[in-house]
Amino acid sequence: MIMKIYAFCITFMLSLLSCFGQETHIIEPSILEISYHTQYLNSYNDYALRIGKNVSEYFSYHTLRFDSLGTNPETALAIINEKIEAARNKNKTIPTVGGPKCNDYLYRNLEEGKMTTYTQVWDSYYKITEDIPTPEWVIHEDSTRNIIGFNCTMATTHFRGRDWKAWFCEEIPLPLGPWKLGGLPGLILAAHCDGYLDIIASNIKREQLSPVNFYNFWEKKYKDIDRLSYLKKASDPTIYPKNTTMIPKMELE
Image (cartoon, helix red, strand yellow):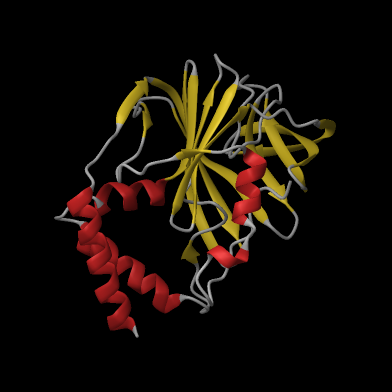
């Protein structure tokens, strides 16, 4: 079975390489980059929130590595081997890289007040543009927490079908945070949803920063779609191959 997966991966990657090139461009210089570590069931991930003057982006470091190395003929085979090893470890106790919507790239355009998500449903690719979400937060001044040396205050909200706790830092007065969380009087350094997802900042980088980039290494053709239509498509089990386990969505409504 592993050899069949191996052969399929090689064929798939080589076919992509023959059709696509890299299409990445700089949007603007960044002024700050926050690294987040996430825990979801028996999987983990590491994300970047890269912030520019007008645009911020949120993406998985592991997805970026796969996309960038996978499009390079000299490194594509190593990426295939990593995917096969991850398949071997599936359903075992070894933590693996993954989590809900970990292949998405999210961009906030603060100047325009818009958020754009580049995502996919199985083998179809979509671009969702919406107003930057504004959750209705309740701030709990008496509940604080120290995160990577910053004193943070807790806030709670019901957002996109789930109850969230977040800890924000007023020392960094940016209304941003991981995923689509934001709108507080300080940068969100941690977030928690019971029984679902934990997010916590692991580092803040202020120097030698990579710029805010638009990433599309595979030159995917994204179709415009509204958020609710996308959620309907993503919830349709008939579009997925049999025996495929659907990872719960970040959003339920």
